[in-house]
Length: 258
Image 1 (tube, rainbow, N blue to C red):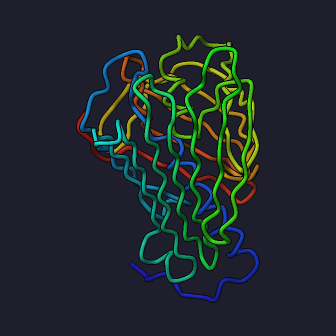
Image 2: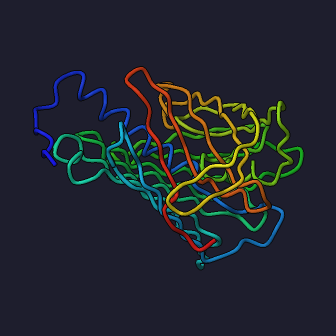
Image 3: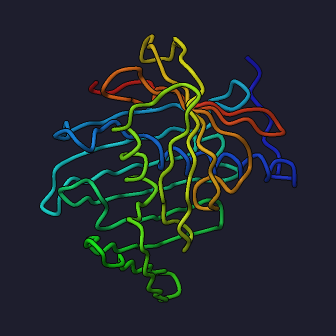
């Protein structure tokens, strides 16, 4: 088989690798398999392969564990060795939850080419009839901003943790409020239908959803995204697909302790 020729990242290539890094960020957001109203199954770990145009472009892992701080969800995404020649991606997202399933701390550290992020968001517990206080810290420039919301705010990880407790019905949308990129976004999640699919981890009956993502920290509005969740109480994301102008990316479950 002919080895791919290594070229300098021209503008079109940079666009491709930027979209790859955005997809890796999406994986950090979406790969959860817990139920808020049930006792979390811990420890858990899932691994996903990321493909673009039939080429393996990267991978992502999700790990859920009990720590001294509470249930902790850690997601890591990285580019493959070949893609890293042009545009290295190493992203980490971590959400630490209160006992009720809402976030106490959200950490985001990314390396995407020459771009870096190192952020921490602290969520005070939401008290009835009282605003929720949220503190956003940018550790790269040592800035700190305080916010106050009347609604319960989720971070991206705990937000999709929450969506899994809902009764997903075809043709109906679900909504949740996610704090990201220093704004509170009301995210609509459309439930499109059911489909049986095969991925490296096996064959699954799934529910297909389409989040209408808005914030730069989630997907930078680069294209539509579709998620296949197992059609059972676990709601494991087994595949993610992003349609963009230059083609499509897929992330497929390769292994896990499900």
